[in-house]
Amino acid sequence: MKDKQVYRFKIVGFDEKNAYGEVYFTENDRTTSIFRGSDVKEVIRMVKKESSGLRGE
Image 1 (spheres, rainbow, N blue to C red):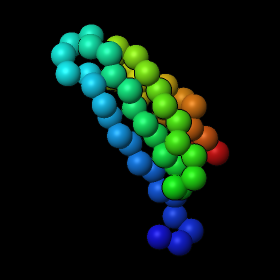
Image 2 (cartoon, rainbow, N blue to C red):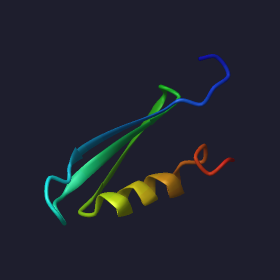
Image 3 (cartoon, rainbow, N blue to C red):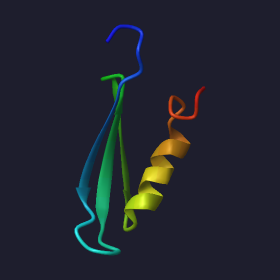
């Protein structure tokens, strides 16, 4: 996909309410960041906050 932003999410854990889990976020097949926590929605918010591409920058 030339000239397109590519994002990959891998969500591990979060099996039960308030269970620990991790979100692996890869941007354009280059950089992978790991975000951890016990609330999947909050962890995904952290991913969006930290990713310049998802914020439109």
